Amino acid sequence: MTKFESEVKVIPYSQERIFEKLADLNNLESIKDRIPKDKVQEISFDRDSLSFTVSPVGNINLQIIEREPHKCIKFETVASPLPFNLWIQLVPVSERESKLKVTIGMELNPFMKTMVQKPLKEGLEKMVEMLATIQY
Image 1 (cartoon, one colour):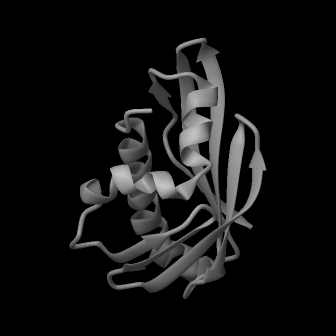
Image 2 (tube, rainbow, N blue to C red; image 1 turned 60 degrees about the horizontal axis):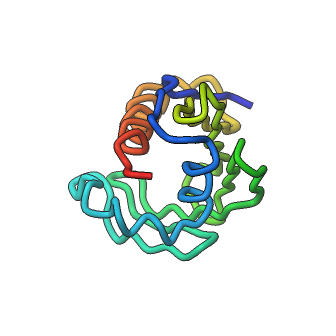
């Protein structure tokens, strides 16, 4: 499995507060307007799943498969042109600060890895930047 990791971001909120917000995908409503509409369209979600269309990739549907309280939220694709897993990891720095990192894991042959590596890394960085700006 090939893993792609975002930078680690320090967020000025407790690990528990961040986890509680991100563990319920209904809370995405507060950041929906920050998602670039030229890249991501048709966003819908409920507590456990997220569905959207990415240009030029296509439809992606993610489901939360595990919530490790205050530490990690794991997602798996239900529908996607390239199946993958995604983890949001949280580590406390202090009572009022946490570190956040996003990781994607997918099975790729060397040719596909070369094609998707740069756009995936850029997408991960944009995602972690957006997660760092949420008011938790």
